[in-house]
Image (cartoon, rainbow, N blue to C red; front, side, top):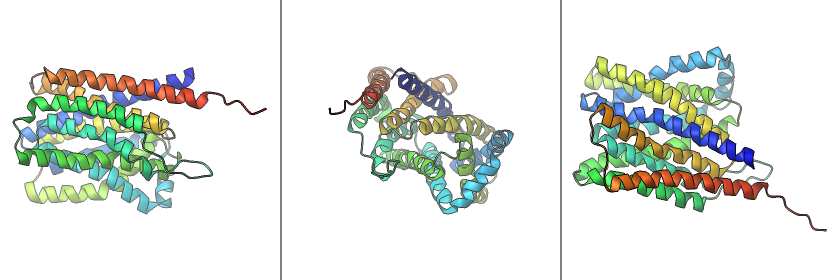
Length: 327
């Protein structure tokens, strides 16, 4: 039981660290939007910049050949779920950043902590008898507390938004919030534990590259070449968010993949992104720090993460509790 608790803390810590690096996406996407950069370049450049780094990391570990073997086994699944997990995730996210304020995009993205729980029935348990996972109602309730905290943070600025800003800044992000955990979980299912997180990210990046090349070509035709500033910031996003954050998050979810409650807790660590975004925007873009209800929202997010940890520990205790045999 103690070991399970230590492992949970490790998984949550990795999730929070990945969340910190992923926050770079929202801050720099907002910065690029303010400088007049195209969302299409922000999307495509990130993943094109990721490729050489991932090839280097996986190549140094001499694991590239295994990636090709697994991709050739199920090419359709790799293309489909890489498109869902990467293209339908990051394309709408950068599109929303171009038309809605950064805090709105970062806050709405937190729907992913609930989306991951609601997607559970699409997956089956491992073992001789396959059963659909059920929605973890307790985890959903706890994640809803976190979501309320996010809404409290957002309400401070929501009054100044027009209807068009709400639509373009919210709906694409909700699509991304469901696509990211769906693509990630489906790829874990396809890989079946045969690839480590770095290999899986590399494979998904390779499989989604044709879509990014098409989007980049359209951006070249539509808006011309990207500015030096956008290329530089896209490079930073690729390293911090694309390589470091994605690999760490995939590592944490991979460790928790057989336990729906634990997986929900790990995915809920992404709620801490908005805290890092607030601090980052205050430091880099001179955005005022939150006050009033927003501070209450931050407290709810932190409380929700603590309750998630306690909940999973209780579930683990129930699992390891010995069952007496009938005499």
